[in-house]
Structure formats: C-alpha cells, structure tokens
Amino acid sequence: MELESVKKIYDGYSKVYDTLFKRFFYPRIKHAIASMEIRPGEKVLDVGVGTGLSLKLFPRHATVIGIDLSSEMLRKAREKVETDGLRNVKLIEMDAMDLNFESDSFDKVFISHVVSVVPDPYRVMAEVKRVCKKGGKIVIVNHFKSKNKMVSGFEKFINPICKKIGWRSDMCMDEFVSRAGLRVDRISKLKKVDFWHLIFTTNLK
Ligand SMILES: C[S@@+](CC[C@H](N)C(=O)[O-])C[C@H]1O[C@@H](n2cnc3c(N)ncnc32)[C@H](O)[C@@H]1O
Image 1 (cartoon, rainbow, N blue to C red):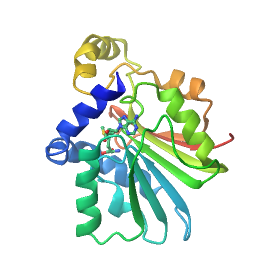
Image 2 (image 1 turned 45 degrees about the horizontal axis):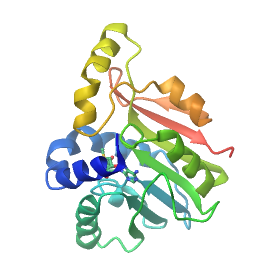
Image 3 (image 1 turned 90 degrees about the vertical axis):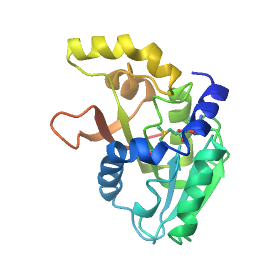
C-alpha cells in the first residue's frame, strides 16, 4: 500500500463512504468511544478520522483533533463539524506515520479502521505512542484475519483485491499487538461472530 495510492483511493471514496460503510463501522465506533471514559478537559486524537463518523460521539467536554491523509475525506468530516456545531473538534490534514504533534500531547487516541490501510502500521503505532501520554489510552478498532483456518485462507486469497480497493485483509492481530509493543487491557467484539475487534490498550511508551 503506497501513501499516494491510499490517498487517491480515499479521496475517491469520500462521497460514497458513509453510504457504503456507515452501517458496518458506526456501531463499533460508537461502542468503542462510549467505552473510552473520556473525562472533561481531556485531549483526544482521532487518527484517520475519515468522514468523521466518530466526531459527534466524543463528549463535548473533550478537545478532539482528527487527522487524515485525504483532503476529500476531511471535507466530509468538516461538513459534519459544521452541521453538528462541534466546536470542540479540530481537523488537520496529516500523515499518521509522521504526526506533527509534540510528544505526550494527548490523553487518549482513537484509531478506527486505519491500521490495515496505512503503508506501515508499526510506524503509525510508534507515532501514536509518542504523542500519547504515558498511561494514556489507545483504542484500536480494526479487522484482523480470522483464527479459523478456512476463513483466514479466504482472507489471504482476497488480499490482493482488497489492497487494490484500500485495505489489507490478512493482518494478524497477535503479530500486530506484539510488534507494536501494546499493553492490552482487553479485546472485545461487538457480536460473537464478528470480523472486527476492539483493542483497548494503555500506553506504556
Ligand atoms: C477505512 S477509513 C476509516 C475512517 C474512520 N476512522 C472510520 O472508522 O470510519 C481509513 C482512513 O484512513 C485514512 N488514512 C490512510 N492512510 C493514512 C495515513 N497515512 N495518515 C492519515 N490517514 C490515513 C484514509 O484517508 C481514510 O480516511
């Protein structure tokens, strides 16, 4: 996955993203944010905020910075900020692999449906850990390959097609957690059979 092609693909998705994906993604985004226990005055970073499906779910008592590579996805997010009067939200065009924030800037970081989209998920996680305070919470929502051999075989088979349309389908959760050096508090799913996981972690730096 090359940065420029990812940007082009998501610029292209921007107009249809909510129609195509909201019903799959929104319930997990909602559940994850509700579980983040965001306190008054906290500063939250939403990495790869996309069209901003998450934005009005964050409590207004927190400051939310959403970053994304795609200016067109951000345009949709800006429309939501405007329509919903989200004065606690700021949106910035930025590469998640090279975050333009000082270290220890955020109390909490939310990353939904992004780690299997970026060219280098470990660079993203290193950046996220840097900008999040020690002891802060990092929450990841993502599809990871199934532990069922038949399903994961299929996910591997379709991976070349998935990469062409903007994500990897063969990412292994255990490898991701271990290589990213994450201290996992808990992992959950919205339903018993679900392709997406919610990973709640504490940043140990
Ligand atoms: C599948 S969408 C997820 C959007 C949103 N988080 C959600 O859950 O609906 C992936 C998003 O990641 C963004 N993205 C991909 N690579 C990125 C990068 N290197 N830096 C920042 N954003 C990136 C894309 O532009 C796109 O908006």
